[in-house]
Length: 316
Ligand SMILES: *Cc1c(COP(=O)(O)O)cnc(C)c1O
Image (cartoon, rainbow, N blue to C red; front, side, top):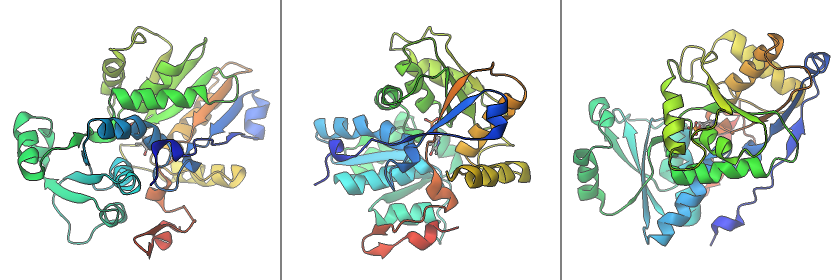
């Protein structure tokens, strides 16, 4: 059986060689967490790992969590459940669709059971009423919040910093809930700065999220981080030709696949800030590639679940 320590976290750090950056004397490195695992890729592994061990310590055999029908978190929790032999329940926002999209059909084949909540119940998903209902239906479970952000997720993401094999001034990541950024902040030790890029519109609430999840640590008073709100492109999963041209060009130039939902927005933001002179000359930037490629169908390796080959789902 796979143990949590069996997952190989030894992912590469790659320096981007791009005349645009060289002319401005900016060094950009990509920490390739997208290569960590074919199904639990990027930041999702770090968010889950200590929760998985805690679920086992508590003797729980079932994980329950929440998400939209395209959620990378749902996808990763389903895969983790299959790999580490835990039952998984996905409470999905909205109505059941007769045809499952590729995220949910992958999750189903991993063994995840779905429970759909309409949008108003979903808003109250953390209430006693809804949680009580879920307990009556499913019995005892280990609860992972929507997006997987909690103290143990922060503890896991903190480790991304300790493995970086370079000096840096900025470490950057895309922000959905801000949990990953909170982990990066809590791992900083020197004079360096953590900069998140919001991928949602009107996302100033993210700063409160980060503060509150850092609250119980001694890191909550630090001024060494910020969240840029300017590169959401209209909201979650919204894109335009400028962004998709950028991600295509970047992938061609570097050989590093990126998507437009998370890493594409972060890297677009970094490049735009470089062009505006935001970073001073000589700045060293590490951008965390948080994965997410299953959602944009650019993974090409064979992906076998229950003897079914998912590879065609991931081809572009
Ligand atoms: C979930 C996800 C994020 C967002 O992480 P948060 O901790 O919620 O901010 C970023 N990138 C990718 C690829 C993701 O799947």
